[in-house]
Image 1 (cartoon, rainbow, N blue to C red):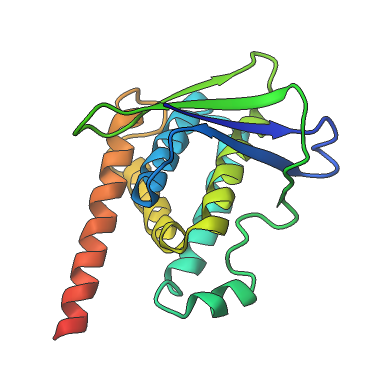
Image 2 (cartoon, rainbow, N blue to C red):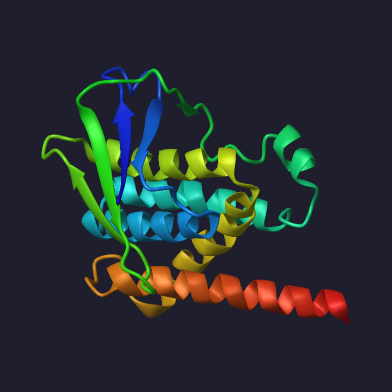
Length: 198
């Protein structure tokens, strides 16, 4: 089992930052995007119909559109240009502590996709729940080039799913949207690799 905790300071409104900690089993690189997809889908469902979700989606989708055209560029170049920063002014800070916490419990059975259970205090502001999605993505981006290049495709697949298949408010979207994102990203990379061979 893996426990992920995302903590926010009391002054988050004026200094947007978060601390991300992982305890327990090591998460394979390819598993990170699935964990994030599940987290995003569950959070989107919980915040469905709110201005907070609209803003989160706008931030992610704008970054996804801009970044998707750069995923085959040299990674150091992408990083040096600041393209890996998901949200302007938002930083990860390991020293952040406090009671404003979103926790993820990740469990996996053999030959099955990991399951993600989210817990957050009732008093936790919707803005912090949304910011936790950004924080976890930024945490993985900073550590995993594969994640950074795959995430834009997943974000754009989520946009298509919520626009064409089912809205965030549909309970089925919690499971279906991540599967859709994985499938679309695979299709993209398969067609890109075939195109490179021809």
